[in-house]
Image 1 (spheres, rainbow, N blue to C red):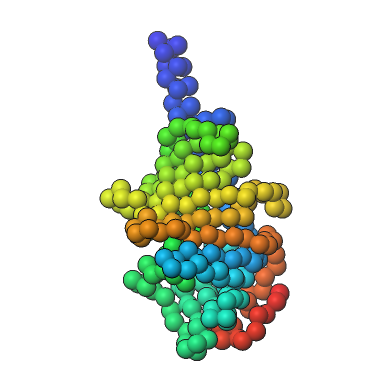
Image 2 (image 1 turned 45 degrees about the vertical axis):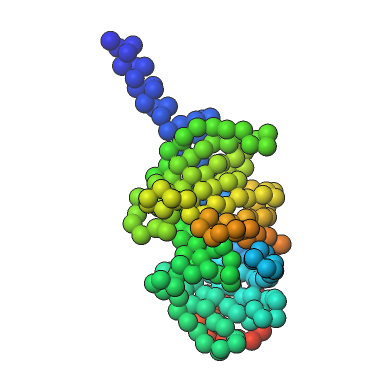
Length: 252
């Protein structure tokens, strides 16, 4: 009887654990790789439209998950457009109209610059550990690399994607592929990561591809990071609505 109890207890301890890591440890490591105290990056977003492809360059200043300032650098049509996130509030500025608009409600579901990403995708960047319960569905080899398949189900209300399935590289501890679902189970979006390399003692991808599965004939949107620096001292003055109307790019 004692042996049976020991076996049951041992089996229970193994549930939710794999390769000496619990599912909680895996998700925590993913969060630590993708998030930082602060970061500054320059990037380009390549939007593959039905008739043409557009490349939009920008610079971003980010502190934690609550503060973000984006300035678009090119093409000329988008140059000077800015975006500011403070907590659960988001504002955009267009130099063409010289107007600051708060993005809220149904507007958050709209596309960012015609891409496959929505404003909601920008807003919902809190650590996964805070938003989801995780379970391991299995393991698989992709392109010669071992991955866990992990299912995330929402533990808070109001998320754009109540269910997510990620393929987590066991070395990089990053989701090289992810599927994002509605509450009904309908697939809404997919994303992939590539170009993973060591940046300041963390693994981080240099290329993302997002695809809106509800768009017919969507070719997806690429997001390529040209430069990134973590744990930068960014002054609070960077995250001010007053900067939205500034004409020139202000360097740190």
